[in-house]
Amino acid sequence: MGAGPAGLYFAISAKLRDAGHQITVLERDPPLATYGWGVVYWEDLLDVLYRNDPESAREVSARSVLWQDQEIRVHGPRGEQTAYFGGYGYSLGRAALLELLARRARQLGVEIAYDRSVDDPARLPDADLVVAADGASSRIRQQRQNAFGTRVDPGRNYYIWLGTDRMFDSFVFSFEHTPAGWIWFHAYPSMPGISTCIVECPQETWHALDLGTREHDEGLRLLEKIFHSALDGHRLISSARGAPANWQRFAHVSNRTWYDGSTVLVGDAAHTTHFTLGSGTRLAVIDAITLADSLSATPDLGAALDAYDRRRRAALHPLQGAARSSMAWFEQADHYLDRDAVAFAHAMSVRHAPQAPWQYRLHLATQYTAVRRIRRAYSSGSRWYRAGRRGEEMTTVRARMLASGGGQADPAVPIDRKGPTGPAGPAEPPGPPEPTDSTGPAAGPTVNPP
Image 1 (spheres, one colour):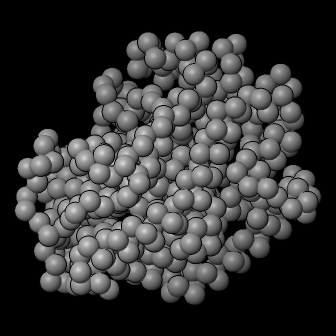
Image 2 (cartoon, rainbow, N blue to C red; image 1 turned 180 degrees about the vertical axis):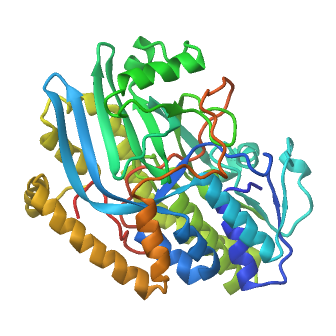
């Protein structure tokens, strides 16, 4: 249930381990519909993808763009200030990711049925196994929330997942002070010519700006005015291939167990981590691989699901703890914004883990252009080395690096620049990377300087 990254990648992984499996993916939306813009990831996810399925990994790599360095811009009573972190990461349009995963799944013999909404999960087709990959608002999970031990804790801040035709080449946090209070965005390139832009603010600012009562277009124009300098006059875009985005509060989903009988949860249906950790797609993929591995290694279904449940919930526990800390920090970000940008950025970097004194010294040194150039050169060497180690073609790596420098939007992705009104919302907005889990170390940068 659900043709998102978790559902499609599980279908691919299970078929790779046993081509005899008969797998059907049911998706309630049309084939090209998606909500939200880009997903962000790091080297460790590419390593995982290449080990599991080089065929789809090569296409993910080829269609991704590279961003380098992170900028923290603060525009407040002290004027405009900017602080820097090093590192790099990759981004990929969500629509492109779903399209290539669906194509790969079909190549392996998976049936995908779109426009198949199952209003009553009790009326699902007969199957040996039901994989609930239907997102944070999973209907299957909601019907059995007592069995799964579901807990949903809403955050305080409001956010909206938008796009912009301002092409960023780095990961940018931009904090703006308004008479109504602080408001900020997290932005990064998603595809040539288009960047993802997640706007977030406290409830007090959201209410004072009347963002919950304004007409949709009027709200977008207000945000463009607030972020005019940070966006360099470019426009915000509401919808990608689905209904326009809407304001919402993040839902922190956790479950006491991830399976009940022959039904198992994966991805956001099982867990969510706040978008300031940017782990949604990576964790969905690892869920999918781990579940496929467990089913392949253990012939007894109950034992396989139990092994998957114990392994993944143990790995997610520290990540969800870090995500809650990160969410809480951003809910109190205005308490730190009276500092200069460098001090504020350091407070951001230690929001979910302490740092050694040398890391603070590195943070101070990174504010100098020469040091950033050295770090960027080191990162480039590391990037080429890792790409060669996993067998990437150098032409693909060069193309990805060139794509990160800008260019026109992908003509295959229709863009609604008017932003019509209507209900919708993002499924998994990304952000800075998560800390290490038991699957392996995160290879990319975090807002904690490496």
